[in-house]
Amino acid sequence: MEALQIECFPCRSDNFGVLLHDPETLLTASIDAPEELAVVAAAERRGWKISHIFTTHHHPDHVEANLALKERYGLSIIGPAAEAKKIPGIDRTVTDGSTFLFGSNPVKVIETPGHTAGHVCYHLPEAKLLFAADTLFALGCGRLFERPAADMWASLQKLAALPDETVVYFGHEYTLANARFALTVDPDNPRLLARHAEIEATRAAGRFTVPTTIGLEKETNPFLRAGDPGIRAVLGMEDATNEAVFAEIRRRKDHF
Ligand code: ZN
Ligand code: FE
Image 1 (spheres, rainbow, N blue to C red):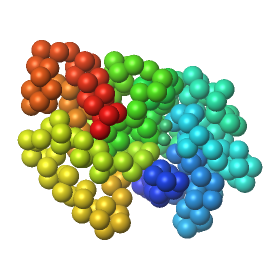
Image 2 (image 1 turned 90 degrees about the vertical axis):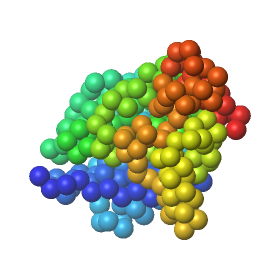
Image 3 (image 1 turned 120 degrees about the vertical axis):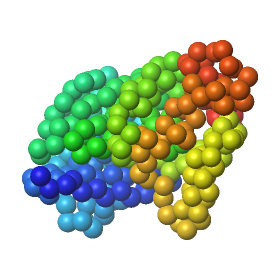
Image 4 (image 1 turned 60 degrees about the vertical axis):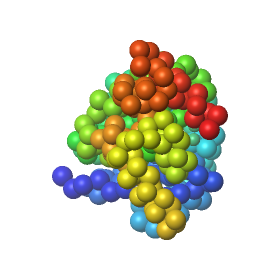
């Protein structure tokens, strides 16, 4: 089986677009549709014709180009059943645990409520890929617009349970700000300190921090580390539940 190919590109102010291409069947999926011309340009760079959109959630910076791309390519739009009414042009709905084939690659849908009530991530277990959009960022997680912290904590635990080597593409380049915040709650984590320095160098060179891996996030992302004794000590929450610690970290980030 020939490996899937990925084209990831910045668009809008801080979004990432991602195209996933199967060289065997020539299928190409756009993960979300943030901006028509940026997505089309990325596809043309690679000579790919977009056949699908995998929608993660209903926010405008993820669905704005749905109808324009559908008209241009005649593509098929897959998205979360819970948000179907808010996803322009949706053809097929999925829910937690839904699986489908992209070429010969199984895709598994993981519902991750928190940022929005129906947000889904797309996991390709054989290719070891996760498209996490606005649920899990490098060193961050999405803001809680539609669900409480406990729900987001549970959602993030589903992602943390994936194999460490899973490669994660996410929705926004917020990583340097996330790293600065992470150091305020996890200041003595040597892996975080090293990663912060790497991120500063990457961004100073005009490069982007996508993708990451589940293993790296588990070691350095405070939103996955509510159980960590060092973070709990910094917060003075040694005896709190993981959900409460996570909620406090999220609250502090909102005001950072
Ligand atoms: Zn969003
Ligand atoms: Fe977004």
